[in-house]
Image (cartoon, rainbow over all chains, first blue to last red):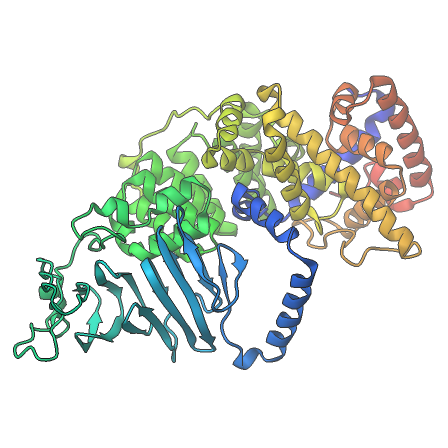
Length: 417
Length: 212
């Protein structure tokens, strides 16, 4: 392969390769996956085609925001694109994801129209003109969030809830976490806590029959006219178990223009659909909106690992770790548990990472990720100075993958000293 | 050491075959995000290693790897032989490296041949356990010599000696003829030896006197 005249250069090259391999920082593969996804690329193109004037304005705004950071109102983007306060946000055939700089997020269903009409350092005001949104509001010491759904006013602290409003169907509210306070026409101000839901049928003009309230445990009082001498009991005053029995999945919301009995599958944004499209941030928001912890406890093995991937790719390492660890404890011995071990290796460093890669190799000795796990483990053992382990791994690596990406490092490890 | 969550008796050794490159390319072209992810997972380390060996620093590594995969996925439908995915990805990475060198040279020219780019540290300090300072000095000196070569010579030299490719493989990777590759290698080798003869750090390294 090399002539004797080149031997010194070959030796020098091998040592350079070994040195580089031993100092190379691990790649952020999760970030690479996200950054090279079609969604991200289209966003990049979209950003590049904006007016230069708009960029200049944005730069000025950014400067002002930077100078007044302490008292700056929170910012927000819609599908990753900065949007002005008051600008209508229409979701006709695809959902829209609205992310706020304080960590809160909204996910609007299709056939939904809304707008963020005001922002402050403590929160924002969102007007839901029609349709449905899933809100995940980050709790802070002091927050001031408000959702105006038609004539109803929903005051929010840190919480997760679904809200739907149409003039035909009225208001539906389901609280998953925390609490909200709601008031409006025909509705005494009341507080809803996690597990409770509220349904207020649409108001009818005088002379029309009053609509019958939805028959469900979670149904709210039918809107009582002010003169109603016997208003229905307030579900908000009942324990959550009576108002809305704990369910394995959050109760369904009626989609815009549909009745409450419509299938949940059509109504709740599907994190797996977003994931399949490569929309990892939307997918994560959708999973949070329907109850991340609940998914972690209920999803089948493969889906649970994929949910972990979604969390990892959207930058939520702790959530990702939770998924992988639960996949291992719930499905011990399965291929998904082995996959989870590999992913945990990517999320950890040093001895912890080595332990996870070793676990993967033990559980899936010829698994799909064998080459990657073996290579990474070799890197870690070599870097830690464990010559005996590195030698064994290098031999195994070269037997299995003689032209693999870590072959040069393996040869260097085995080179006689 | 085994994890506590997976007791040995529950272990089911897997025999799942890794999907072939052809299958991954096909699925990725159909828009399957998992296939795209597997392509990145499979070749990101290879691309990073290749670029690191050619460039000698890590300052721009993540960006260059990302650019490489952006091009890979953009041009994937035009890949005629999916089984040759690795070689194709490598060629794209080398093209990015070539562009990087040209752009750096332009930046240096514009900054009146400043010694170093502010945004690109020459070498990465953390030494592997046991690495001597002589080795670090020698590595630095080697890449200083490579920095002084023309792009094609540098790439040929790095692929031949650091990536340990055969001359034919170097020619394939660079997309040039065997004769052109041999000329580039000859020139690069001569250049390297002349510089090494004047640099004691490199001389010791070439003769194998420096401890690893």
